[in-house]
Amino acid sequence: MAHELGRIALVSTYNHLSRNSMEQMLKAGFPEYEVDNFSVDQIVKSHWFWFPRNLWYVAKECGRELLRGQTAPRHAFFRTTHTFGRLRAAMQQHIRPDRHLFSFQMQSLYNTSVPGVPHFVYTDHTHLSNLNYSDFDRRHLRSPQWIELERSIYDNATVVFTRSTDIQADLIKYYGIPAEKIECVYAGSNVDVKNAGEPDNNGYSNRQILFVGVDWLRKGGAELTRAFRTVLESHPDAQLVIAGSATPVDLPNCRVLGNVNASELSRYYSQSSIFCLPTKREPFGIAFVEAMMHRLPIVGTRVGAVPDMVEDGVNGFLVEPGQSDTLARVLCTLLDSPELCRQFGQRSHERAVERYTWAGTGQRIRSRILKELGLAADTRLTA
Image (cartoon, rainbow, N blue to C red; front, top):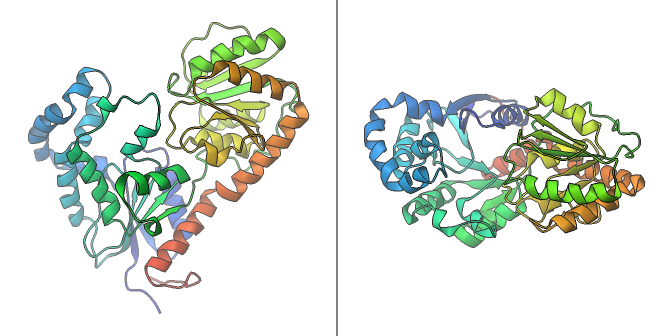
């Protein structure tokens, strides 16, 4: 039977890195429908009359964070309880039961559900997931009022899709969301890896270690440089390439690339023998997926989504955050054995293909949404 509704509402922040990937995923997963894109940034900016009153809420709710430099003014403006409520009401002008089969919201910083329209949320974090990190200062927790608003996002969703199993568990643990209302569907890569092919790393013997991350301290850059200093004592020909961050590093055999565009980044993956990102906090970590797609052994930490991607001793090694000595030891283990690197790299690729493609994520999402809408998984809907 043809369905009368012919459009899907995709709601995201304007500059979210996965926005284009998500749009393509929905179009591929639901080819029968047109996708309407709604940017919450643009919607908020179009309601200029919210701004004066919201400044009072910024001062009240985010004043301490602003003074400490813990958040940018723009982020504070978009994350007040006032903006949260006004945006929720405004979405009823854009998402309509007579037009949209369902709405699909990226991330969990706002609630864009509209009565009468099945609503799905896809997120890689919750605010209370910060409690899982040993270096998180509880004074930085948002107000109880904000936490209740965040809980309303999940309560009003038909299903909450997550990128990782740790967020799936946190929704149950911290927010009381029923397990049957949550599904981990993973995610794909934002870098084109279709033509990655075999690594160009001299059979994993060129001893090049790759780090990819902009936030140097949060991503464990300081720990990596300490570990690499130790590595050089036994492997003086080892190389460290740092992409993303422009933080200077005073070490031999180290190249700091700064910002690297996507096509160039793929080349650096291919030319490396090991990927190392000893991150301290990680909502998801798309760089891990990119490295796995490029058949690299992974060295990461036991935080966030990383254990979903890296099985210790199978496709890489996991260490506790901040442990430079252990980090140096496992890096030396890989540098000593190109064959082990090759084995781990092949298993990384197999896991990436199995879990971390947008096509696979899209099919998981399609199957669950059709089930929630009461339609067979093989139904071909027509607008």
